[in-house]
Length: 305
Image 1: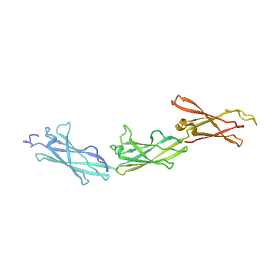
Image 2: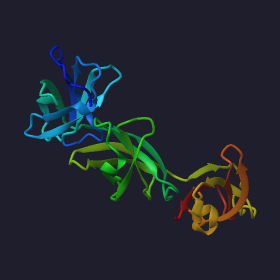
Image 3: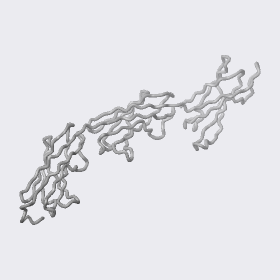
Image 4: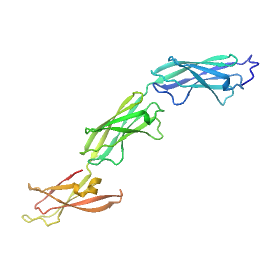
């Protein structure tokens, strides 16, 4: 503590501040809400007390913090504002010799805003994704929010609903991604709706799109027939690849029916040969559909999940 024997010419000069807050959200760390100068440049933070009147009916003690500038001190504190608006803050500063000053600062309190960001996500019909898929994201105007502050519910557009996982986007304060998994049974485009809510009751709805494609890619073949004579055994009438892991692991899940174009249909034999897709470095299976029926043919195939 300092020697206060001669303070005839000493004074305290208030320095007001304008401070931003988010309604219903307490600051994680104390906020600097004002400063003051003491003409006694040897003064220390412990020489002072501060009482903060926040303008919303709350009053708390402030903390005096030294600054690199001799004789200058900051006042910090925290307050939970409930309603957005502008508030007049009054900070009463006193030292141990009875000198005092009042800092008149301003708090600007904004409502929390959740801004939805839609996305388009790809799925394979009949295949449950092996890991969660990012299906949308959102921005929180409260940059100090954490992923644990939110819940998400995903309506997948096919009658299914499930909880989503909210994760903070690295290096993007206030931005969060929502992920989840769903098994689409039929190829198509689905409208996905994601309801997000934070721990303060603020809500947003993210509108996204899920595109489910068939796991089967089929190509026809050309072959010659002689009227009245059955096709030779083993004639390849079509080829297809199937990226469904269940079909790769268990080929018996695949069946095929041939529409021969003359009003006749019949089941086809599926023979598998393995090859490596060098670009994707995973295995596909190439199926040869064989039958002994006559006349020209068209292939209709089915994948049973």
